[in-house]
Length: 242
Picture 1 (cartoon, helix red, strand yellow):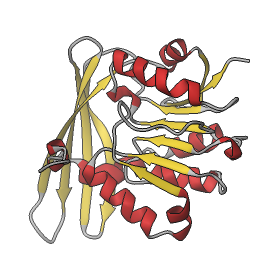
Picture 2 (picture 1 turned 180 degrees about the horizontal axis):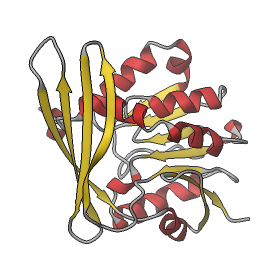
Picture 3 (picture 1 turned 30 degrees about the horizontal axis):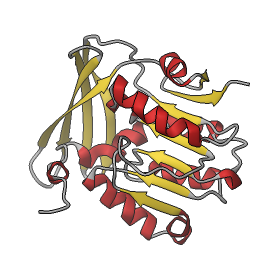
Picture 4 (picture 1 turned 135 degrees about the vertical axis):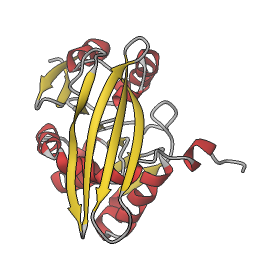
C-alpha cells in the first residue's frame, strides 16, 4: 500500500488503554498548565509532539484560548481518536492542525511560542534527540518554554511489578501493573499487563511492551543549553537561559 507505514497497521495491543493511564496519572496536567503560564501565543503556534489521543491538546487549548496548536501523533490508532476529538469540537477544529509524522521527520513551523513533549522524548535516542534539538531550538520564540514529561527513571534498572492504573467502565474493572528491566545502553524495557474483569463477556489479559531511553531533566538541559525547572516527579520545563 503506497504511502502507508505498515507499522501503523500493527499498534501495541495495549493502545486501547492509553487514556486510562493518563487518567490515573493526572498530575501532569497541572504541571503543563503551569509551564504554559505567560506564553505569548502571538509569537507562533504551540507544538505538541506525541499528542496521543488529545489530552494534552485540550489542556493547551484551555490554558491558551487564543493559541494555534500543531499536534503531531504518528500512531494511527491514537491519531484516529485525536482526529475524532478535534473534529467534534468547533474550537479545536478551528485551532488544531494534526500531523502524522514522528518527531524525527515532522515539518516544523518557522516560529513556535511553546513546545510540549509529554511522554514522548524518551522514545528518541541521543542522536535522534540531538538532531531534533538542532531543528527545533532555532524556531523557539524568545521565552518560549519546552514542557517535558519523563519517566522518573534516570538510568536502566530492574523494576518489580507495581500498580499502574485502575479504572472502572460500566461493569468492567481495568487493572494494570507495570514492570521494567534494563535493555541495551540507556534503554529500559517496560512491560504492562492489563486485567479486564467483570461481566458481561470473558475476562481478558492484555500485555504491552515499550522501550524508553532513560535520562533526567538535567540531561535535557545540558543537551539544549536551557535552564530546567522540575515541576513534579515526572514533569518539568526548559527555558532559555537569561
